[in-house]
Image 1 (tube, rainbow, N blue to C red):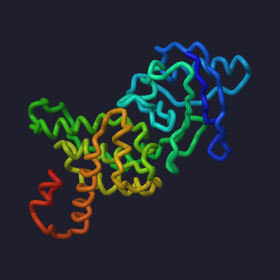
Image 2 (tube, rainbow, N blue to C red):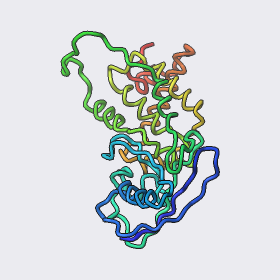
Image 3 (cartoon, helix red, strand yellow):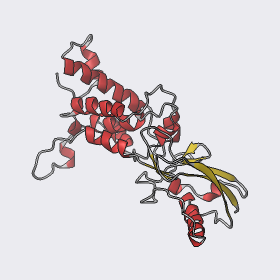
Image 4 (cartoon, rainbow, N blue to C red):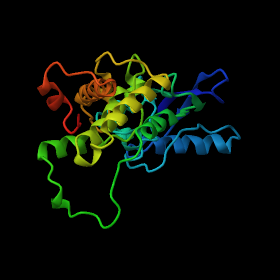
Length: 267
């Protein structure tokens, strides 16, 4: 395969950037996109040129580091696939590919295709720790969890924090990411003691970091490589409303509202 690449090159966040054209020849269709960039970088290095900077780690679709835009789509055209898992056989000989970094105020560009996603780490940190007794762990069957809750919690826990949801959202919102992190613990008994503080603090940090507001467009769900469902945003909003009322000690209009939306919170 022969490809034409248009790659965003930018030295740092304060420098102007531009698209630079590259020709890559004899690409093996079984290569991943990152492996194809490795080949390009070897050629650039041999020419004495600056290689293209991109972030990666596990190359197994687990760490979430590898993401960038491919032809305007976060992680590329293949659904439920990270950039490191996307193979070149999904493209055709002679294709032109446009590679750009995530575009969001909260994700400043480090260099080329690499952005600083530490804002997501700070949102997680704002959630604090989970209280756990010391000593030997309990037997797994000692804590009864409804299968529906366990399944939903594990689905939310699949989030790898890649930031594709932010990049795809017209508002650059991180609601899907934050909703997944809040839902994961909020659906399990172990996450109940800090549930109020977690919802309040993580949503507050979301605003501090400069992410946009969610308007339920759904682009985040469409590009998520782990297929996190948009319902986690509704669960986050419900937890935040319940936590806000609790923190202000406001009465609930309907007692069932508290039980329905905020399982595990104690009045």
